[in-house]
Image 1 (cartoon, helix red, strand yellow):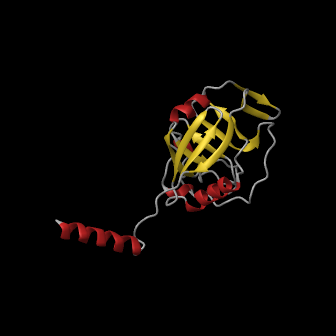
Image 2: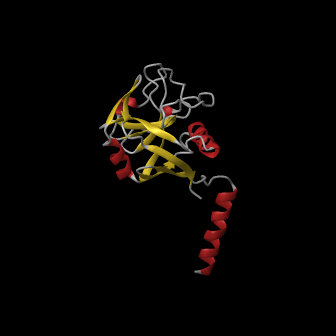
Image 3: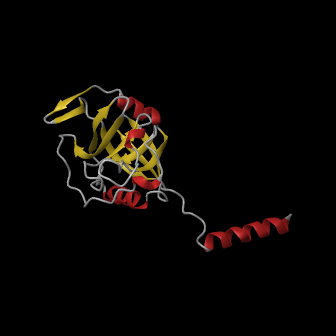
Length: 190
């Protein structure tokens, strides 16, 4: 038995050292005024997108931003506006990785963007239901879809609670929570 355990331990070390072992996905906590949402990022399936998101987290960019767009039975969107609905400056846009085979299913987090498929910067959204029409289907302006780069693994009830807030218009913006849903901080789990 000891020989088998020693062999398995040695095999695991070789497996890890040869680079075959995949690095664990990053886990984050979104601390909001309504509770904590924990998300596992798909580092392996959306490396550009997850690194972009992690860079924003590391810089403290998201602290004090809000979920500025909440549409019941669709999604909640945040990461770009302050409580006063001032849009924050961002880094340059990233390439869209929506062709990674991951669908916009309930509880997944995806990058928000403009009509330009490769315009995502800091804003993200969490799907409240399966939104298959947001998925990649071809490399055209209409077909690129929205890149999913993680999934809620704890706190989906907080996402659902945010989805129920009363919304209205704020200047040119619609579906804005009347009482701000603040992102106090996003931290990377150790």
